Length: 293
Image (cartoon, helix red, strand yellow):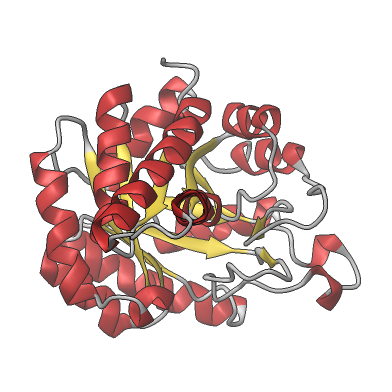
């Protein structure tokens, strides 16, 4: 069933689990994520990232996402991820998306605040939830930088310069009226080359200031235990794409290698990729929702 992000995350925050939010730039990804969520009987968020417009456009993939969400046996939010323009956010709302992320985290705090506040007014008038980002999510050397605020750690003299400040987060959330806030505490978009150095206590510090669901972007390289600690401390939504996509690619590579000189059909490739993605995202969902499974 199609629901808002706000309704899904309020339950997650209350019961101390996290909802997986998966970017789905093709039909097979949509099918894989919905199937995994239904088998586990957990809510899920389907996302279209603005940077994936080069793979498929919002008007093409949006109706597919919405159709699968409406027919699903579990609660499904359809969300625009890292929307950097008002135009795309409005387009998503008009298509029927129940949630948008307006990402102005790469801009000054003042610009981020004022622009987010304006989009919240528009979205809430349409019954649509809003996520924003405060702080900077790192980008690894192997890509995955879908966030406008995604940067390399080497750009900062101190990690405190890019991590989300608790007091500033309270002022931002209260002033803009956002329904969820993506916070920075050491995670990275893309393939992590070294073990992440997470400030998990910062999540608790921010939660002591504001009582809204928090979002983890860039879960690459994070251990199951660190995921669970982050969730216990206040993370209610976890964005996940890179490793699921790699899992699909690895299955395809194995399929072609095993075929050798035999013919390989395209429908076999996409079917195998879908199963690889499903297995990986189902494993992630199991960690994220371990407290209710």
